Amino acid sequence: MEIVWSIVVGTAVGWVAGVVMKGGALGIVGDIVVGIVGAVAGGFLFGALGVTASGQIGAIVLAGVGAVLLLVFVRLLRRV
Image 1 (cartoon, rainbow, N blue to C red):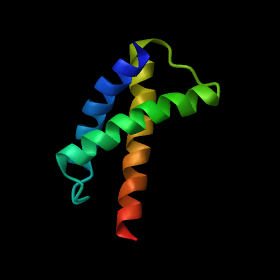
Image 2: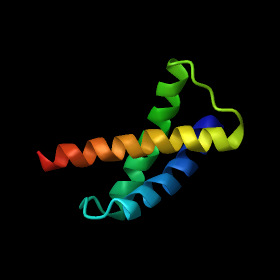
Image 3: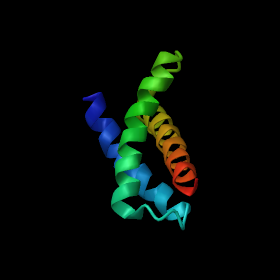
Image 4: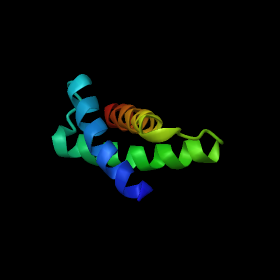
C-alpha cells in the first residue's frame, strides 16, 4: 500500500514541480514519471536514514522532497 501511495503522491508532486520549474523541457508526462520515481526513491532514502513519516502529511512531505530533488537532478543532467 505504501508504494501505491507514493505513486499517487509522486504523480501530483511531479506535476506541481513541473509547473513551478518552468522551462525544463521534460513535458508533463516526463515530470510525472520523474515525480513518481522520486517519490518512491525519497521514501526509501529517508527510511534508510531513519527519518519516518508520521501520518499522511509526513508521507506527502517526504515523497515531495524526494520527487523535487530527483526532478532538479534530472534537469541539471539534461543541461550538461
